[in-house]
Amino acid sequence: PKLGLSAKNYGRAVYECLRGGLDFTKDDENVNSQPFMRWRDRFLFVAEAIYKSQAETGEIKGHYLNATAATSEEMLKRAECARDLGVPIIMHDYLTGGFTANTSLSHYCRDNGLLLHIHRAMHAVIDRQRNHGIHFRVLAKALRLSGGDHLHSGTVVGKLE
Image (tube, rainbow, N blue to C red; front, side):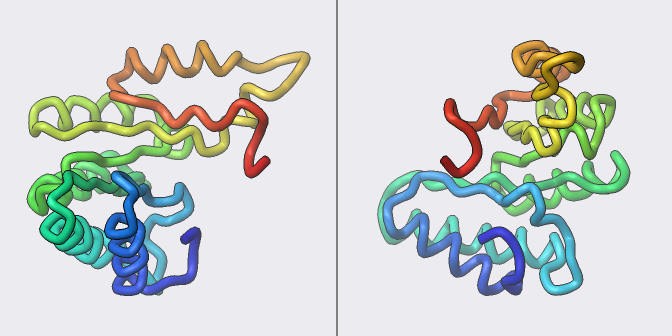
């Protein structure tokens, strides 16, 4: 789900996806900390969904929790919460959060056994311009060098096609 669910209903949707056969789900880049679904509540309900689906299926399940925030300090607080809940993968929107924040977050992840998934929200502003911009392969390399473990790369043909 993109937006609009409460944290509890979001957790239920994650559970249903994982219980239904998916191995991983992820927060949408727009899912952050809105008044109807605060990040800490979402993290708690998603962790519960992961553990419940794992117990019922006997399979390893996961979810990428969006830790992107207005400051690096807030992102680190969210990463720490994910770690404390036992959720090993967090997500960062590198253009909205920034490359320096990405590196700080990646250092925290290395030191604490977390994986860092990099989302490319807003990438088209930079890499889809014919006459200027930066090719996505260059951005991807920079993101890997700044500490991302893996990168949301999109589809071959375009969004939702």
